[in-house]
Length: 418
Ligand SMILES: *[C@@H]1O[C@H](CO)[C@@H](O)[C@H](O)[C@H]1NC(C)=O
Ligand SMILES: *[C@@H]1O[C@H](CO)[C@@H](O)[C@H](O)[C@H]1NC(C)=O
Ligand SMILES: *[C@@H]1O[C@H](CO)[C@@H](O)[C@H](O)[C@H]1NC(C)=O
Ligand SMILES: *[C@@H]1O[C@H](CO)[C@@H](O)[C@H](O)[C@H]1NC(C)=O
Ligand SMILES: *[C@@H]1O[C@H](CO)[C@@H](O)[C@H](O)[C@H]1NC(C)=O
Ligand SMILES: [Zn+2]
Image 1 (cartoon, rainbow, N blue to C red):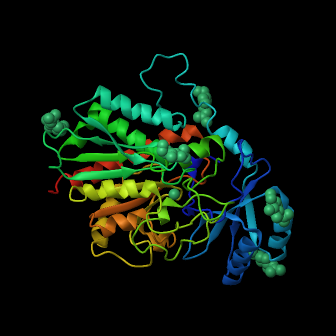
Image 2 (image 1 turned 180 degrees about the vertical axis):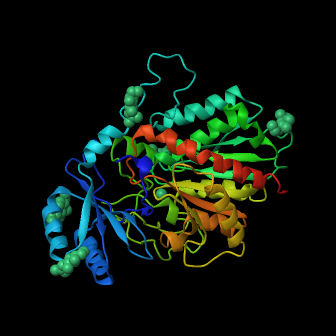
Image 3 (image 1 turned 90 degrees about the vertical axis):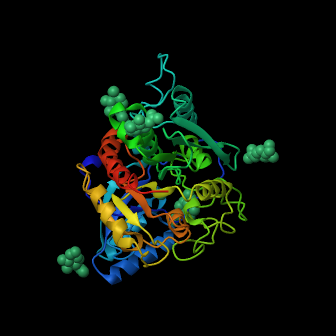
């Protein structure tokens, strides 16, 4: 089934990761993704129990209804799980019959576009790109449009990769205009997110029809917040989510950067188990990546009026708070602007609402932190994909469909003053 016609509206998550040490790429041959549908509280409990007994990786789940659950099913438990579900009369469908085949088909044209050309950069939006291509493109833009684009290095990752963002502005004096912050690549495996962030950069900088977006707005766009994880998901383990830092566990490494922020850190929806995919870290801001990110945003907190953080999947625009079912004082304002932006989407219908209402609790997330330091409009975007594996031919439909929302956000932000 094409992602284009998806109507699934849940969020993607994964709860427990597997043993982490290996040298070559992990194969998911024989792994399947099943969508389990329950119809009673009793059935919910049975599925919850099965998730725990088998340590199932959960791909999609909604806390409030527990309506449907996508789980990754390793080959060795497949027949047992099938038996248990049948026994309980719980229905399921096989959504991905062989995960490794889906992964093999996802990005077949990587690098092909740049082969044999003398292009100044390797970036395009018909395949997913490694970090070097993305950073190469940012650098190309800074060199090619020096009056418009500034490449900013905000720090160094755990594995010593640079943490780059771009500032796009045609203002003659710095910090005089309201600003928009956009980031991607918090979660390594959500490849569609850096693809959209770089697409937005490309459209603002290189598409003359979008010049109006430079009118009284500065843009700060950081396409890959977690570069170590992103690279790891390309070369070793396609489903890697977290950072790559050491933990107290020799077996399990990495922290969920989106549970590591210093606002309600350690609350519901985060874990103190280093093997969990939502491991909060040893303390708030334990990760060099979240420190560099937050310090930079703090330094621009007076200018930044709108904050977008891009994730997959779920087709949703989520509004704080996410630590609990609570609503910031300007929730209705954020809701109104979010609905206006979402009304521009033609291919995909996005849900707009509070994060806990539409998804689940996630204490210590970056968007809550951004709201807590006073940014007026804060959204987490869950892009319209049905799994983490999104064939590259869907990048352009998804990014093109999204871009008109940027126009709506910009129109609003341009009217504000610093
Ligand atoms: C399935 O295999 C994994 C390792 O790949 C192992 O940890 C787990 O115990 C196995 N489960 C069953 C039910 O055999
Ligand atoms: C199983 O579920 C179906 C509908 O989902 C229902 O019609 C049927 O009666 C159930 N059977 C048992 C044994 O519970
Ligand atoms: C990163 O660089 C520092 C200083 O050069 C070095 O001590 C450290 O071992 C490096 N870390 C990794 C993971 O390569
Ligand atoms: C900045 O962009 C706006 C909108 O396109 C334009 O009106 C203005 O002239 C530009 N300023 C500079 C210095 O290029
Ligand atoms: C790879 O390129 C071919 C030929 O251009 C195209 O038909 C196919 O859809 C591409 N595959 C993906 C996954 O983008
Ligand atoms: Zn995510």
